[in-house]
Length: 298
Image 1: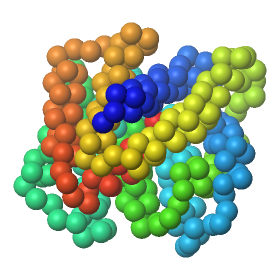
Image 2: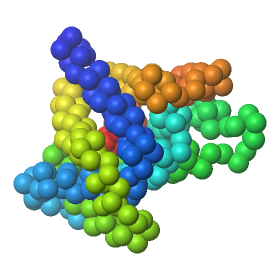
Image 3: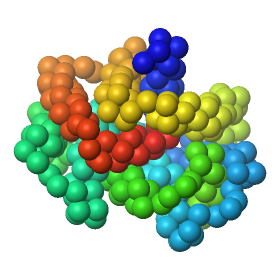
């Protein structure tokens, strides 16, 4: 990989990691209602990507469903979860999406599960469960991390369904994600949340900056760069580099939001990332699904 492209890959992972931190600050520090945050974000994405909406992929119901799951549906749960969960732990739990995608690809697409991938799945799940486990209270698990896990499962399902959609351009897919997400999220925030505009005005320009960063820099810029690199290099080269994302998130979480990083967290993170590497370092169809799984606008 050219040095310039390696830097771009680092930039993409850094922007995704920074978005997790920014999201934590928005829903926790600024106390912006999470569903409202998701609704406004994807409203901006829909407006900016609207020129690339047509021609509509077929079947339309599939692109609408995948767009909602990868967009508003998944992010609503993620924003709700990160309100109480730390960015570091959320980043590690999100790695469970890789083995979940592998399992779903086996069930829905008929892919085979060999011994090596099974080992990777076990390692990743063990690491993720270790991060979620509270040594003082044991189980039940953190409600916030369970919401993050639910968001991850939804994203994995959408990634497998996305595999069945052909010929969708990156900005076209962004347009459908925004369009499929904005109205359901508006309905959800008006039904279940109150005081959205008051809290948004109280947060002021900080909230505006977070929205623009989320919609413009993360959704449009970072993912456009990522799609370009995926098209230029083999997936088995790109996928292992994505490990930088959770590592950078953990680092930023410690530095910016004061996340605790103890021995349990270190061991769980190490096991999860080792499991992810075992899964992704393979030259087969699962690599393309892993790449799709990472397109979840983090």
